[in-house]
Length: 437
Image (cartoon, rainbow, N blue to C red; front, side, top):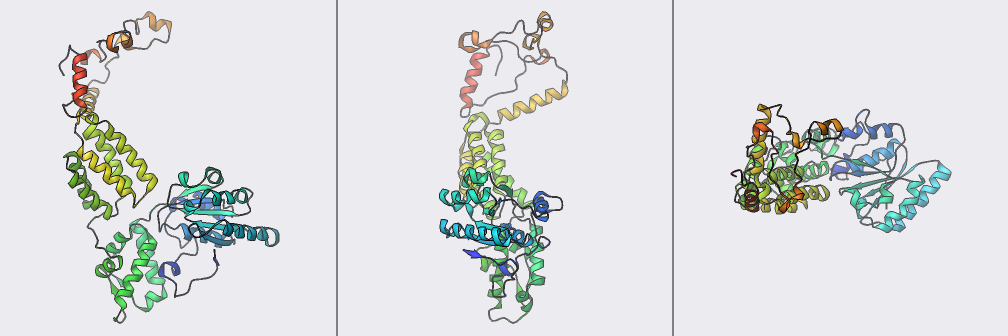
């Protein structure tokens, strides 16, 4: 159990990420959707009405920092437990202290549980009563979807706030603040070159960025007098990997996603997984990749393998549930399957041709026999009177006109001979003997 003194500043011996941790909301960077002026969590903090909550977000997005700021601003006693190393006994000790605070000090107690998704059911059950009666204000931090990792009774007593990965501009802002304010970096006269390399390796994680910077400075400082200049070489040594050329949001971003899609459309799983690896290593949003595969499954595979859309949609959901780095396995499985599927764009082409006709013929009336007749007048006018109910005929099919009169012989959907569409093509030809497909 770690009792954190919210008023104490870390010493210069502490890691850079710790000693540069923001201490007020004014210093906190990111999560404007929660902490900006007039935003929900900011209102609650400023009004000293902080509820129990779960902060769900990726590593380095500010969950621990925010919890400590809340404790400091609300003048609460702050306890931090790590779910990996703490047990029910540790929870009980905090609850005893909270009871003392309430009775004798009239002081709020905040219990921050890092990686709360790793608490088992018994550990989470031990918190229920105390959270419900307000003995403690619980702040849980998790990188996993709390809907699956936190027991429903506890989750229902907490508000869930979703934190986003830090954007490049926000990381730049943090980096600039640290270089200007940190006494150790200023003592060494540290200057950063190739900032974009550091930001790319950080992948939206402020802690990773600062840890990497600190390691790079140490590597550079060995046998070198101040001032120190750190850049690509030191960053790649610090992170033990080279940077991949990938401009998230720039031309290279669009070039690589284009190559990825075209490789799957062209039925080359090896190329598809290579471009996928480029995006994963470059820090691309995995949900962006999954979303594009959902589109491809319908546009380029369609009914040649209807399961492709099911798999792609499941992959998107799974990526959202699991998160990186494990989500890369789901992306790879889906990309290689889609690339290996039979292909058809017949559904896509059918829609495009139908849209073209809709735009040219904007007022084609619905045939009388297809119209609904909810009133006696409509029935008297013949609405639906000649409609043939397919299930009353052999094979549950009857040939009748379904398109408007001006388009009655139009054929939009032309199934290919690829995959499952071969069966669809044969079935439609056997039904619609009056038209050529």
